Length: 358
Length: 266
Image (cartoon, rainbow over all chains, first blue to last red; front, side, top):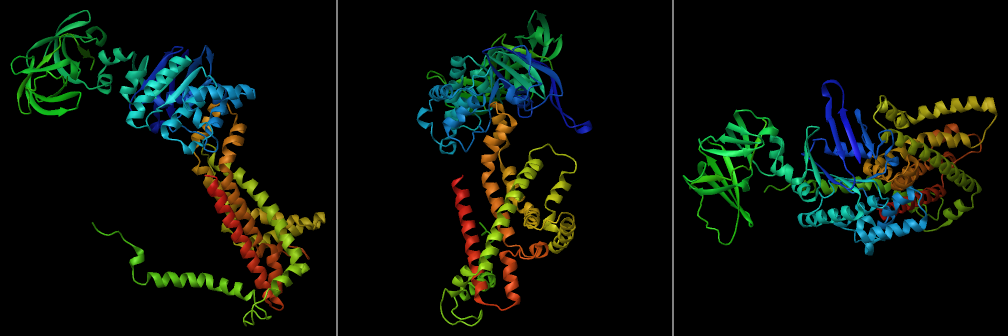
């Protein structure tokens, strides 16, 4: 268990001071695949490096298994890192790289050899054991970096955007591979990424970060379906933001009036703390459906149709000038009734839109 | 699309380039050619012979000077390279600190100070020590050479350290290596080509020095260059050409060896 409490990191002094981490508190459970997700500069990598020991926080505490680790140098912390550029030692072979941590821990030779073989097998690199690291592909280097970090059996594995240098197909494979490794080894993974899809597919829990703060922590479904605030809704997936008027609140549900005058229902009223009156409604593109003009809760002009293979994106300009995006799956029986330039209606599934505090 | 500027297409480029190379290498070629002269003039060709190589080889003064030169250059470059590695680590592997720029300038000071000034100051300084201690051995020359060789060794080592991926050292420390183990297992092997380059440069610079050696040396401590200078003052024979050519060959071998060493390391 990693307990991060009130960790703040300030770079620079006076007017040029920059808060890379702003009073961050989070508890990461054992055997968890925990993801730090956010745009570049949000502090996610700084937080990871603080756990690893490469960054000293300005204040706060980090405990690992109940023990304060901030006083320990990186080489005394039972955590290992997979670096963004892999940082494989270029003057050593694949096997020597994987053995390095075990040798530094002073493990007996026979144990080192056995563990290295086991790790090579785990990441399916056994035939490459004696290659120089410069002679293997990017995906293979990735696996070696993973094996090297897993070999000493750390309590926590830290991964700093390890998939960002791989091409699309390989990245997909490695996402599944990472999940498999985490399940098989039972080691806590702390994974840093700016790629929301990566975060959604692999994580047990996700912490969405922005400007040095954690904005929301939750499972993939919680974060996607019930974003706590506008930043999270905007950063994760595509979102339509609509100005609405709250008419009635019952617990978490609310009856709201849309700009065109039609009414619908939404959720999130309790969490967002919206009162009556003006508020923002967030809806996902796949939660709305195009209907003939006059039949929906909103009206607009179909300004663009983009075909994506599995689905089609419709961009509608609403009566008040706002943009609204819909995503519909391309099924064989689908009628392609709508073309660019049509006047269309939009149907919103009731009760799935999320009210946000603004 | 406009053609990119190509300096080779400018009028007069080729003749000018050839002229530069001729001016650079013609004197050296002449020196090498006349080292094989059968006669005893360095300007009148009298046929091919190896007699001056044989004469230089058998000359006991040349032998002694050569050994002395190699001893001094080896000791001085070893000292200079060690100091340069420490200096390079201290100027690249620490947090930026006040006065770092000044220290950088101080390390490279021997490049800026006129050599004759260094020579005179060392002469006076060592004379004072000689009076106090009575020691007159080779260490004065070794220390003097080490001092002016440090910046030459420092530059390639520092360049290599700066070009090194810092995350490698972080990765080592993440994998339980203490700072010393990180240096020993990661930094030093990575740095090796830089150290080799620095040591070779220091060796060649020391081997070739005249001014400081001339001032610092005691009687009977001629190095190869000061011996040759002494010969030129008396009667010039192609023996000097032969020694120079041998020196040239030695340095070419060093450079080529280094080139291949640094290539296989990558």
